Every structure is written in C-alpha cells, then in structure tokens.
Image 1 (cartoon, rainbow, N blue to C red):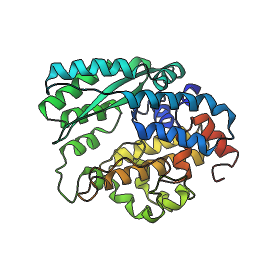
Image 2: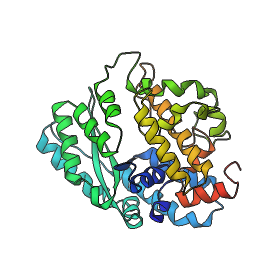
Image 3: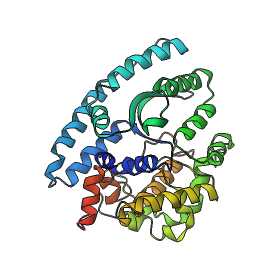
Image 4: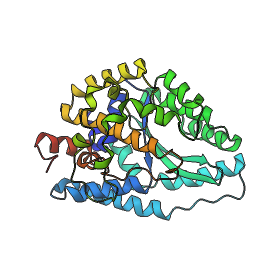
Length: 322
C-alpha cells in the first residue's frame, strides 16, 4: 500500500488506517490554510530536491482555488445543486486533486462542502479517500450536505459524515446530540482528558517557521491513555470512550508495524493538539477563529504537511529536529 506515501503525512496515516480496514474513510479539508501548509513545509526543507514538482502542484492549485467564486440567488435546493455542479467542475481541475487521484489506488473524489451559519452560507471543499469496494457515490454525500443546509438541520449530516469516517457510533451520537452551552460543547468535552498535557505557551501563533517541538507542547501526553482516542485529525471522541481508545490503540499498532514509531507517536500528538486548538476556537471569546496555522504545533506539525515518504525519511535520518 505504498500509494499513501504521496499524500501529506497527516492525511496519509489517516488513509493507511482506512486501507487496513480500521476505518471506513478519511478526508482532507481543502482551503487556503491547507495549500499554505504545503508551501511552507517545502520551504522549510528546501534542500529536498524531490519536492520541486510537489511545490509546483500545490502552488498552482492555490492560485486556481483563490480565483473560484460561487454565487447563487436564494437558498433553495435547486440553486445549491446547480452551484455545487459548477463548483465541483472547477475543483476537479485542481492539480492537487488530479495528483491524488493518480497516486492513490483506492477511490478518491472531491466535492463541495456547504456550512450554514446565522449570517450566511459558507462553502469549501473536501477530498475523500475510501477503499475501492466501500465508497459512497459522491452525489450521495453532496445531496445529504445540501439537505442539511436547506433544512437548517446539520446534526443528521454530521452523523452521516462521522460514519463515513469510521468513527465509533457512540462518539458520533454524543457529538451530534450533546447540548451546547456558552461554556461547553462536545469539542471541549472531548479534549478535556488531555488538556493538562498541552502547553499553550509553547504554541506558535504568528505563522513563523516553528522552533519548538510537538514533544515540548504535548510533554507527557502518552502518560494518559486518552491520547489513543485521537486516532484521526478532525475527530472529537466522547470523553472516556473505551471504544475510541481501543480503536486508537489498534490503529497505533497497525501503523507502528509499517512506519517508524516516532512518526506514529507524533501523529497522535498532533491529532490531539489539533483537536484541542479547534475546540478552544469554539469558545465565545474565540469563535470565528481560523484553523490552526501550519506549524503552530511545532516543527513536526509542519513536516506532516509533506508527503509521507519525505516525512518518514526525515525522521529516519534524524532530521526532524534540525
């Protein structure tokens, strides 16, 4: 299953778990921060000559993505479907999407992703990865998303999306049914068991090339068994969920059989730190905050935007800390 080696490391390890039948599917949210991460990571290890083509693909994709503008007159199912068709046609032309389809032997597709807020309807894109024999039709995923936007009921779509990603059913139900308050939501509940192991004073907030390490930011996090529940980048497990923890341990062992253990450990550390920062962004004083900047969780966070083959080689050569 060497085909995942061409994917960004943070996504490749998600996808490897899918190919090993530990999960049903995985995905990447595509936006400016994603492309910025690809470019920053290549700049940080510019001595790796094999990344020239990868840099060109990411840069061209970002330029195309920045030019996409989608409008529709009113919030109806027909208007959203029409806008989605136009948007998906453009997304499928991104060099990044074509690159993944060429490199990955399973099923890979990109579709628009809509999110309704009290102020407006936001749009983005998501690239999905599935085993070839277990992939939904892209139109099914899109239609469910459109229905959620039109009806204003996102809970059902979130449950469906959680099932697509192979999350434990109990965690899916807890996330969609948890009552949100000004002080607490399911995201903050999910990270509470590992919060004491995350040193926010060490987190980079200025977007510069990080000088610290994920080891420092999450010092001692593997002393908590809860870290294994963070087996995916955008997953918020139900607190104290044995099923999520056991799934994570199984994925950890599966990945460790193939990749260097320091890579696998940092994968779990970064996932937990990422979930923590995203959860903090749901609090009243930080709502509307953007996703964590590439490298905000240390050097390794930035390196995990490189193709897994390159990231793994840097770890093996002892250069992750250079």
